[in-house]
Image 1 (cartoon, helix red, strand yellow):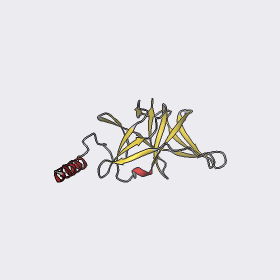
Image 2: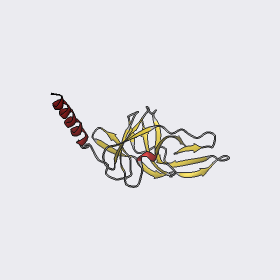
Image 3: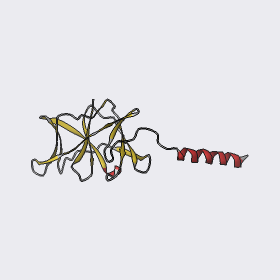
Image 4: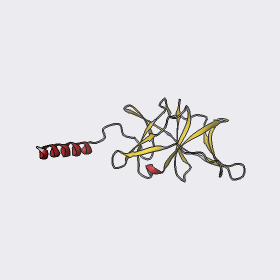
Length: 156
């Protein structure tokens, strides 16, 4: 009887591990997509321009006052199919909307804190990115470490 129970538990465990992801897939690699039920919304991919500020401050500026990628979800979920990007190298930051553009300033003594995200591998190159805390309405950017590439979105 015990052997049957163990065999049944192993069969259930292996069956669960063998299940494949059957939700929507990103259309393009290396671009995070906001997941809304069974549909995906591409984040706004652009380059942040670096501007020198006071002393050693560096401000990164993104054109436009608001992102075209919008979500009502305070704890958004993203899907990312990787080719060149590493999911673990992505950081999420809140941007400030000023004078028709979005910006974030990094200062040696007052660097903005990244918002925590958890990356879970769904399949070989497919990752689920989950924001670990609720986001307030506003502009946000996901960026790979050491890069000016940004993937912007808005929580409304």
